[in-house]
Structures are given as C-alpha cells and as structure tokens.
Length: 283
Image 1: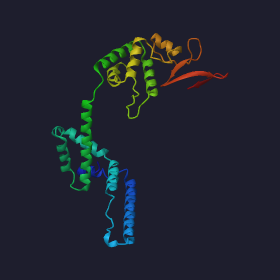
Image 2 (image 1 turned 90 degrees about the vertical axis):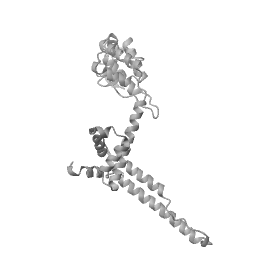
Image 3 (image 1 turned 60 degrees about the vertical axis):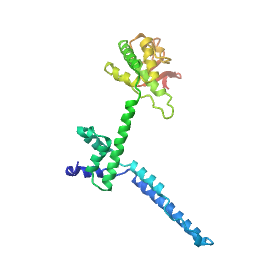
Image 4 (image 1 turned 135 degrees about the vertical axis):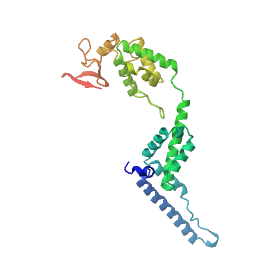
C-alpha cells in the first residue's frame, strides 16, 4: 500500500473507480432528458387549456425509480474486490471480531471508515458482502451432500479400477461425459474432473459421487472393465483396456493393422482412411 499510514482512507476510496461510470453518466443524461420532455409537455398542455385556472401542470419529478435503478446499476459495477478481501482478512485475524455477529462486524468497520459519503458507501459494500457470505454459509450447511454409501462404494470401485489398470479408460469416459452432457436451463453442469491417481480417490469420490452418470461409469469399469455403451470399447484401444492394461493407443491401428478407435492426447477421436491416398481423417 502506498500510504500505509492512511490504510483506512485508501481502502474506502478504492471502491470509487466503478467500471460502469461512463454508462451511468449516459443513463443519467437520458433520464433527465426524458423528464424535461415530460415537464415541457405538461406546461404546453397547461398553456393550451381553455380554462388554465382549473388545471395544475404536473411538473414534479417522476424519475425517482429510474435514478434509483441507475445508481444501483453503477454501484453493482464498483471495484469492491480489494475492500472485501481486506475486510475478510481483518475479520479472520481477530478472534473476537470473527466470533461477533454480522451487525457488530459492520459497526466495527463503520467506526473505522470516515464519516462521509465515501466512507458510508464503502461500509455498505462490506455489509452486502458479509450478508452474502452468511447466506452462502447457511445454504451450504443445510445443503444435502452426496450419500455416504455412494461415496464409499465409489472409493472402493476406484481402487479396483486403478489396480486393474483402467485409469486411462476412466478418464476418457469422464471426458466423454463432460463433452456430451445435456445441461438443462439453470442446472449445474457436471465439472470436467479427472481422476489424478490413487492419492486423489477420496477427493474425486466426494466431488463426483453426486452425478449418476459418473457412478454408472465407475461401476461398469470396476465390474466389467468396459464403459457402458462405449463406442471405443472395440478396436485396439478397447481390447487392451478390456484386457486390463489401460494403455492409450496412439498408433491408430487395431490388432489386424486396420484403423480403429484411439485416444489422442486429451481428446476423444476416431480415425479412418479418406480416399486412396490413405490420409487420416478425424471427427
């Protein structure tokens, strides 16, 4: 920090550079322009009325909701990352403040910040961030986790897969599931998570046991040695994985010297002969 003796002042002023300030100025000009047009139309109608003494033109400001929405949109684009990280670090470093309620934490930062528009603005962002963290903690505390039997069964099956040398087949199937999944609107997609090795079994099972397709894939490989409905289970790659060696084929030929299914790097592909010149074609 450049001015270490003025840490609080610098943190409060760090919120000011909003990324939406230019758009907010444009919106404000449009809102005021519309209000001036409405006021001019009201005055014109008043002057043209046959009995102006009985009519009162409505020239009061009716743009309050528009201004409020504009201010909220600009405030949502404030650069709040530094001050929120500083507030979280301050709370984590103080056991008394960490055990205090959210209202007490907000009051603590309100005492630190200057009693000005800038300081109150910064405190509002801190309060919103603490409220969001509190709601997320409550949600995660009551969120149902993956059932214990599923996690335990997946750990046991993953150890079997590693012992039989089907690690490459498992990761290939996981890539295929991640690439071909059908994600419904507002649904959480399955992460592209691979098994890194024996040291990653517990973490992998805890994260991926909630997905039925992953459970089916792991169970099929552990029991039969082949992925369910795997189009690459035939050919050289499929034969080797069914035999239990788990090698990824890069030669592109099966046992009879013909092109077959293969895994090339991290992508799942098929190779065939295109024309008489024997050029390889992937899709």
